Amino acid sequence: MSDKVLEELKSQTGEALNALRESKEKFGEKSNEFKAAIDKTDAAFKKYDDANAVLVKTIEEGKTRAEELKSRIDEFEIQLARGTSGNGKAAFKGSQEYKDMMSYVKGSAPLAELKALRVDSSSDGGYLVPNEMANEIIKEITEVSPIRQIARVRTIGKKTIEIPKRTSIPVALYEGEEEAAPVSQSAYGNETLTAHRLAVEIQYTRDLLMDSAFDLEAEISSDVAEAFAKAEGLNFVSGNGVKRPEGFLSNAALVAAAKDTAASGVISADDLLLLTGELKQGYNPFFGFSRQTLAYLRTLKGTTNDHYLWQMGLAPDAPATIAGDPYIVLQDMPAIAAGSLSVVYGDFRKGYQITDRTGLMVIRDEVTGARNALIKMNFMRWNHGQVVLSEAFKLLRTKP
Image (tube, rainbow, N blue to C red; front, top):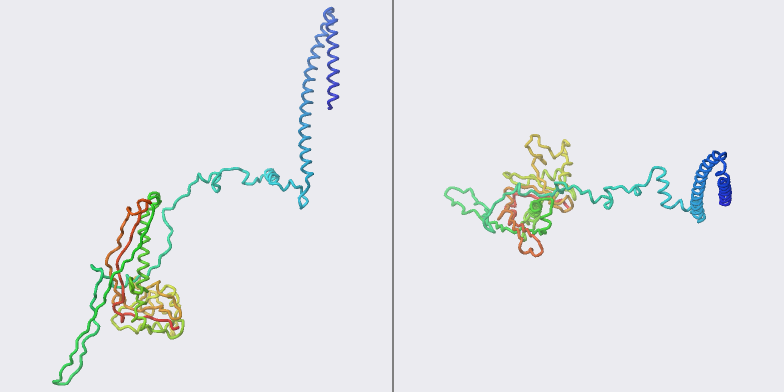
């Protein structure tokens, strides 16, 4: 309904009401005949006024809603007038707001718009969820050449020890009646072993010590023990003897007397079998090689009945063997390659001597680094190792 019609209606209604009121004032007080009709007319007027007021209010509210709708339609027309995107769709349909609205209407609102507390977003609650700390540390295996298990180990009270060594025995000859016996005697030498210091210093802050989830010093001690074992095993195998042990692979006599394989670059079953005949009877030898060499040797077969040289021990306490002799994995020995000393065959108990001057010593220093809240742990031990009987070993060199 237009504003003009509304105004005319209100004007006409007002004029009619005024005329009736004037008639009431003029005639109502003088005539009781019209009193009942006037009262009835007043009730009708009141009812009409109330209905008219409701009608006017409804018209006003409708007008307000119409204006709001017209404003929204105008805004929508402006957006449509801005053009379309390259694919022919209205540009507003590419907006994030439009996409989020359509997703919400379809019941699949993006998670980013749900505004829920969650673990994978730190600012949305992730900070409130602490991580669990495991009670163990994942550690890689440290491979150690276990020379100590098969060699002779002696504890000494001095830094250096000299071990007498018989180098030859008397020569006895058959002689005729009343002939003079030959003059001969044993010859002696000695082996000198000087213990050298194996050491490492570990530094850590007092803050780390106080707040660590583990027994920090116990972990450090355990790791250092592994490091010492690895360093010892490496040097007992290949150390050059200068301020460190002499490894059997560095002993000049053993290297000079090494036996070459029959073919270049490979080791055959015959090479291993022939190597076992190089040592005198009376020794209790082991084969020694890396696990890579062991894996290769396990594939070797005899030439007569096609059986594997590697044999698993049949009894629970019987060792596996190569060509009938036990073996030990020394991971610090080189892999099979041209010119490499990849296999050792020897009696380590008689031929290799390890001397320990001290056990593992630990000095905990809280003084020198106190200004920086540093604690220093010095680990050290004195020991040595070297070949003392070269004839107890035989090296197999892969022919170049």
